[in-house]
Image (cartoon, rainbow, N blue to C red; front, side, top):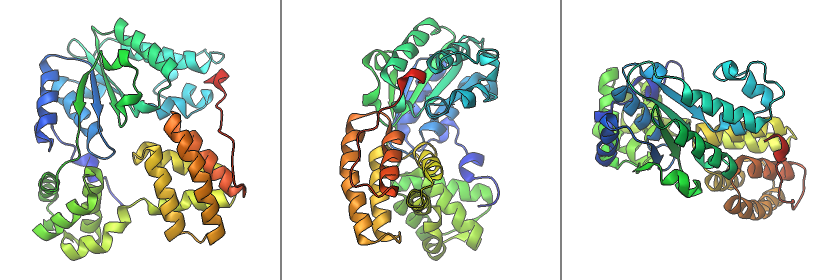
Length: 349
C-alpha cells in the first residue's frame, strides 16, 4: 500500500478514542500521573491510546514519550541492541556487558533522564507479556527508584503474566475491542478527513469483518479507498482480504519447508510483534493456512498438527512464544514428527 498508513496519519486524540471508559481512565492520568497497565487484545488501540495520553499530558511528546517494544531487547542479539540508535548512547564502550546488564542499563538510563517539559516523562513497554520474571523484578526496582520523574506504562495482551509487584504499582486500563458502531464512527471520521466517499453499507461491512480489530478495520478501509476511490460494500468485499495476514503466515510455512529458518523466524517476529498475535492465536493460524492455502500434502499437514499439539503445551506453560513457534516450524521443515521442548540459553539473556 503506497503512501502513509491511515492508522498513523489519523492517530486519535484522547477525546477521540472510541471506548468511553478508556477515555475516562486515561484522562485521570493527565493531571495525576500514575503508572498504568494498558491491557487488551491485539488491534484494539492500546498503543494509540497511550500516544494520545502522551500528547495530552506532555508539551513535548516527541521527546517525553519513550516507547520500547520488548522485542527490541529479548529477540535481538547483543550487537543489535548495542548498535540500535536509541540505545547506543547508553551502551557506548560496554561491549563486554552481559545482555541482562545491557537491558537494565537502558531501562535505568531511559528512566533517569530528565523530562524535556513538565515534571515527568512517559516510558512505555509494549508487548510486556514477553518479559521474563527475573527482568520484571529488575523493572520493579527501576519503577520504584524513578517514580517521581517517570510514568511507566505497561502495554500487554496478557496482564496475568506480569508479576504481582508490578501489577500492584499500576492503575489498570482495560481496553476492550470497540463495537461495530464505534468502529464505524472511527472509519467515517477518517474517510471524511481524507475526502474519500463512502456509504453506510461499506463501513458496516468493513467494521463487522474486522471483528473488533480497529487497526485492521482502518487499513481495510484504506485499501478499498486506494483500489476503488471510495469505500462501498462492493469495493470493501473485493479488497478486504488484501489486509489479512494469510500471505505472511503462508510465507512462514513455505520458508520452513524450504529449510530457510531465518526467513520463517523473521515472519513469525512480524506476526507476533507487528500484527499483535499471541502464540496460541498464531499457532491456530498456521494450522488453518496450512490446511486451506498451502501446497503441503495431507501427510505433511497431519505431521504439523501432531507437532502443534506439543507446541501448544509449551506455549501454555512458557513465556517465549517466538521460541516455541520457531522450533515448531524448524521441526516441521526438517520432517520430524516430534521435538523436545526448546531450552533458551540464559547465559547471554
